[in-house]
Image (cartoon, rainbow, N blue to C red; front, side, top):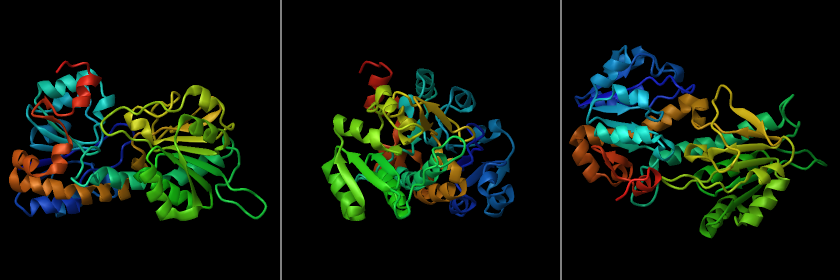
Length: 364
């Protein structure tokens, strides 16, 4: 079987799906791995590193698409990339299809693409192997991002996340007590910030409290609690996720307007549309904007900012599923793997996510 690792060039993307070590796990089983030249360079993996592990380097988009049964990419499929794809190909990527255009959705169907969204893959116990890993990384990045813009001259307010005797620490509000929220809370607490986490799932809040103890304040996330929390926050982190669906706008423009001047709002929900009416996607090269006096950081591919760590982590988890496909073929691997089944957006051009029928106005 032929696997193709694409070189992403849009949106300042620097991650790569599979490292040379991951490629070796496929080539040693007798399979072919094509790597588009430069795909791993930004993460510290040269073409020679891949060659040393048995992969073959190719030098054009058309060639990597044309020679691969299974395409491995990080960024969502676009109308442009669909032009290169062959009918019936299998693709692994972070697609977030709920925010894709109808043209992309229709073209996936027309070309009979099998699309596996790494962000929606889920094991039988409810864990999401790849999303969890990326979420842990994103959560740990939150204090670095927040601290940079909260104290930054000339934009920031000159506030430190932690404190010294006689000076209160920064107040951090995190919406969502899942993996991102828990990881972020732990990291903020480590820097001495005052952390409040809101969620509608009491069990999640209980679990968070059992992990972090009295160092975190947990609050049930009704609308009034969210409104009141935003008013005192120096930093707000949205870590809300609804699997395979658009994120609801739980934060209105009016609520953003009540926040402290030059407070920092990090919206990790931007991948699925964003949690605020003021959210719009930004680039790592130009990550922030000020709206209603609040600094907004809304980068969809946020872990590209730690691309080497993210690439290694992604390859480590993804390799298990690629090896399964290599051993049994795409069809049988999907049949045998619950996680791959749950990750299907489309199977040979058939929509496998009912929510997308509603999203794109398709009558069942």
